[in-house]
Length: 333
Figure 1 (tube, rainbow, N blue to C red):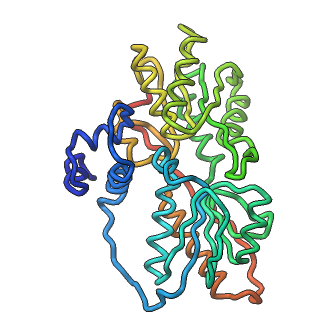
Figure 2 (figure 1 turned 180 degrees about the vertical axis):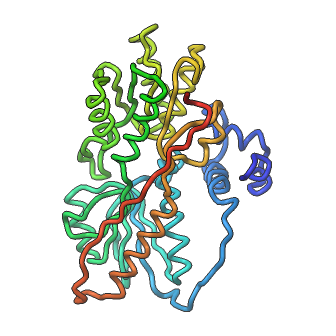
Figure 3 (figure 1 turned 30 degrees about the vertical axis):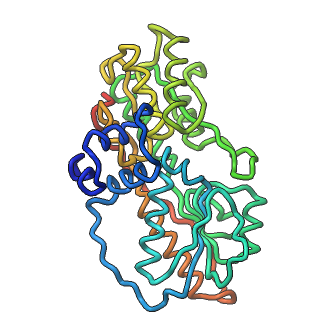
C-alpha cells in the first residue's frame, strides 16, 4: 500500500501537501494539475503497467465523460473509471479521444465506438447514437435501449450497509446524499442508493424521513448537510449515517469533528466508492468499495466485442453488473 511519502516522491511535492490535498483542505493553494497528479498517484502507485501496444494506433474510440475535468477532482470516482478505460484501450492498441461534460464529438472522424461514463438523458443518448452505433455506458443502465452497460450492484451494496448498522445495534439511522442533473440540464432520477436504503430501513421498521438529507455530491455539501442534521436533531442525532459517496462522508466527518461529536463513538459513518483518499481521512473512512477501474476495463471489452462483430453481426446488448465490497475502517462501529 502506498504511503504519503511514496506519493510525495512520485509527484515531487511535500508529504504535507499530499496529506492536505487528500484530506480536501480547502485552505491549501495548489494548482489543479498538481491535485490531479496526487490523486492519480494515490490510485496508481501500485499499478504495474505492462504494455501490449499494437500497431493499431490509428484506431480510436471516444470517451465521453459526463463530468467536467474540475468535477473529476471533487469526486474522482469517475476519474478512476476513465483511467481504467484508457489503460485497457491502450493495452488493446486503441487511441482515445476525450470529451468532458458534453456529448458533442464535433467533427471527429474514423471513430470505432464510444464509451460514455456517467449519466445521460434520453436526448443525449440519441445524440451519441448519431455519432456511432457502437456505444457502451459505464455507471448507467442503457440496456432498455439495447445498448451495452456496465453497472454497480447498488441494491446488494446498500443492503449490506444497512445490515451492518442494524447488526451493530443502530436504530436511529440517517442518509446524506445528493441530487444531480444531466450535463444538458435535465434532472437525473432519484439516486438508487437513496431508494434502496429507504426501502431497507422501511423493511426493518427503522425509516424516519427527518433523518434523510440531500444536497450535492461533494465535500462541502456533506459538511453542510451534517451541520443541518446536528442543528436540527441535537441530542437526538442519529447514531449512524450512510453517505451516498465518499466526499459527502468526508464532509460529514469534518462537521462532526467541528461540533466535538466523536466518530465513531457517537456517530458512525459509512461512505460509498472507496476512493483513494478514503484511507487517509481521520478517522479512516468505512466505505463500499467499487471496482471502478475494472468497470472501465470491462466497458472496453464490451465495446471491442461490438467492433469485432460489426454493424451487421446480429449482436445482442449486454449489461454487466459489478459486485461491491464493504470495507470497515475506523469511522464506523
